[in-house]
Length: 407
Image (cartoon, rainbow, N blue to C red; front, side, top):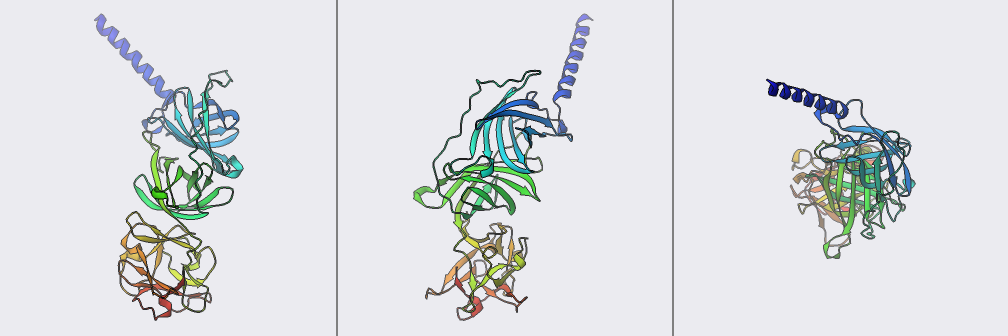
């Protein structure tokens, strides 16, 4: 009887301890967050020292919000993987991204400045940071915590406007980047808007992916020249979902990504016909929406810019700068009269394009690989500034609307 009473008492004590631990650290979905993560931390990065405050979201889960250096932050903590990622906001927009490895009382990692006004320069945009959890009633940073700055691989020049194939956690699509002289970066990935920074002196790129204006993922990586000394760079790195809806979980928050076959936009502006000059291939009404028809309209300088890039399957695809979409034909249609559209880049047969020259050096054709038909100016004018839609037609260099005069 005594042994049974002792066993029952121990079981009750164990249950009580488990209940207390769960009450302190439990989050939505049954996951338990480490006791040292939420709360106040001293943080030091890039000659700055301040306060990082983190609290779980009211809805539960592993998402969190708070402040860093007095600015709002939001992010996600993969408690099983012991990795956290968060964005620091300035005037409601991402200014810095933090990726941290966590332990019970401290964190260390890399902070990425996402623009020239947030600490980035053409020489570097990534900086080490460390944190120490503040015990109750103590306000003191631990000076013994070292800052280990990320390695700087050396400068790699990247064209101001590029398109690349990107593979991220098994998904393939297109990365479009436009980079100004200060390294500030805008563009699209998987058709979604991106904003960030490229430090050419370090070869490091960092950007945030937005969906309907809301940050959903953070990407960072390093450019390096391709093997054999080719000029076009390759990009390798990681991306971090910021919410479970974007792919985060307590078990995993870090995923590999790479981009290859970068190509500039500046010399890619297909124009139709021998006369009049200045009529370009572009989406109808400058639309950036999938399934918009491609038309021949007055050249504008942005909407008509595109890149012909080699996909990982060896075929070429035409990517529009403004939308980050590929041109192709709906449903894989191969019949004459099918109207050209822009759509999500899928590596599908209906989006494969090849150049066909005339031999004279004054023109060329764009042929759909699947049908071996040519992109041709089709229907009558739609508006005063639009000559017509673009269709699949038999290739004939004698037909004016069947040939481009520049590219």
